[in-house]
Image (cartoon, rainbow, N blue to C red):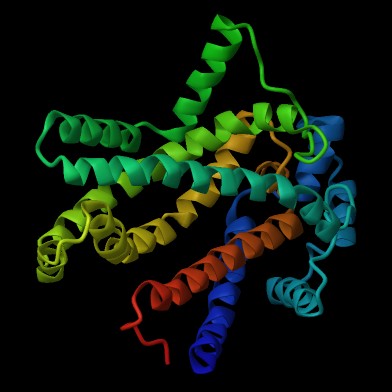
Length: 319
C-alpha cells in the first residue's frame, strides 16, 4: 500500500503542474488582461489612458516575461502561499476556505442524492428486466442524461419564481445555525447536479447487476437456500459496485463543473462562482489557484476510489 501511495503521489506532481501551466497559457492567450478590465470598468474602454494602463500592468507584474510570472506564482504555491487577488488584493487562501464549505456541502448533497435515487432505480430495473418498470426506469435515466443541467436549473428557477412566487434565499446560511434556510437554498441546485449522476448510477448499476446475476456463484448461493435479499445484497450488489464506483469517479469532473454552473445560476457564493468571477475580470492568480484546487480535489477523490477497490474486492492488489 505504501508503494502504491508513493507512486500515485509522484504522478500527481506533473499532473498538477501540467494543469496549472495549461490554464496559465490559456489565460495569457485570451485577448485583454486584468489591467484593461480594471481601467475599462472604472472609466470605460474609450477613456483608458495608455500610460495608466502600462503603469498598472507594471505594478501587477504583467510586463515580466511569462516564464518569470509562472515561476513566481508556482514558487509561492510550493511555499504554501496561493497569492493575492489582482482585482481586490484579498488573500486567495482566506477567500477559498470561506467559500469551501458551501461548495463542499453542495457537492456532497449532489453525490448523496445521486446515489440514494440512482442505486435503487438501477437495482429495481435489473431485477425487473424487460418489464414496464425496467422500461420506465431506463427512459427516466436517459431523459436526465439528455437534459443540460444549466437548462434544468433555469427551468426550476422559472417555475418557483413565476409559478409559485417563491425564490431560494440569497447569500449563504450556515447549516448548523439555520438548517431550514440552508437546505432551501441548496436543495434545488444539489438536485439538478445529482440528476445527471443519478442517471449514470442507475444505468451502470442495472448493467453490472445483470452481468453478476448470471454468474455461477450467484446460482450456487441460491441453490444453497440463501434468502433472495441475502443473495442480492451480499453477492450481487457488492460485486456490482466496482464498475459503478469507477464510472462515478470519472464523472467527478462533471460534478465539479456542475457546482460552477449551479452556483452561478442560483447565485451561491461558493468556489464555483468565485472562479467565474475571476475569469470574467481576468484575475490570473485567482483563476490559477482555483484550477489547481479543483485538479487536486479530482486527483484525491480518484485516489480514494482506487483504494476502495481493495475493500470491495480483496482480490485486487494495490502493491
